[in-house]
Image (cartoon, rainbow, N blue to C red; front, top):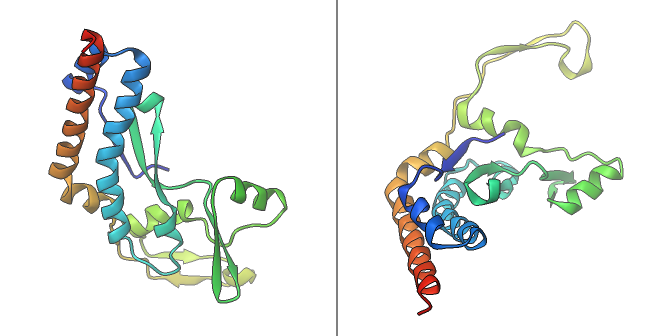
Length: 181
């Protein structure tokens, strides 16, 4: 689930960069520019996220798609938190996959509830509450606690400045290599 995606596909500077550099160099600089911009948003999102267990905050990350054309910021799909008494064990990547292969299930999967935290939930009925047939409970819903969208909105100028700065560095570097300077 992606909550926010920044796309540079239509940037005119990117076209200039592609002309000046080989595809390999171009992809490397695209990733560098997106990394520069997404770092600002990711740090702000981690500052804004409401903390209960810390699992959602720890799971926030970015992933590059299509060779660096765009980046998605949100909770990692392969992140799990397992309750061990009053503490939590946080696992991601290979550790989380091995944990699931062993037949163990993480109690907390932030990717499943991040959108509910960001956007809130409406009042609803919970049927078969605590596994009891025929027992329903009225849930009042939850107010939204946005953390990703405000992180982007508050940092648009800084994000674009960082992307532009890195992009011009890439253009200058590629031009020097093309001209043999």
